[in-house]
Length: 166
Image 1 (cartoon, rainbow, N blue to C red):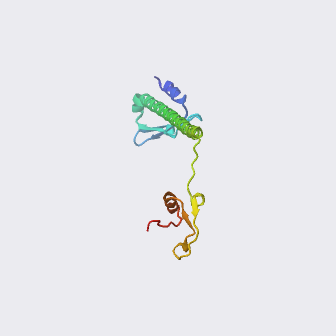
Image 2: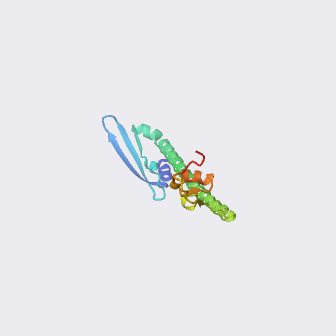
Image 3: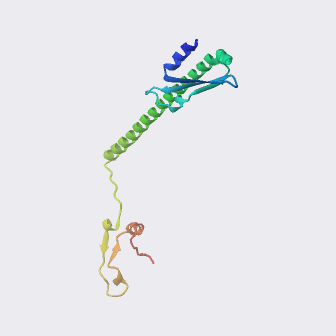
């Protein structure tokens, strides 16, 4: 490719600003090619400028190759950024679908079985009233649990329980 054909190919993906400066003592030029990506390209790595310093003869021999390599790397970065964006969007969609399916499945299984959970608490445990005896032993407890399981449930719920066998 010629110099301007290569600049044209590079300018198709970004607006370019070029600066050229010369150092008289060393006999070298510094050329900066600074891309400004278009609005549809939001990848910040694509704004990395190309800065080259060489003699005019070295620029005559290798500047087009340097621009070609720079353009190809920029295209590769743009392709990678687009591929990464597509992967992330696909992962988001899959995650939303998975969560939606799980919620739907949970709602269906609960409705199909008609199961509702009820936690045992001291307020809804069966109790059996016993008449107070005349002696002092039974006077302290007017109510006892109807079953040992209810006593265990009351103990785990934070209520006071009595040992029936001790």
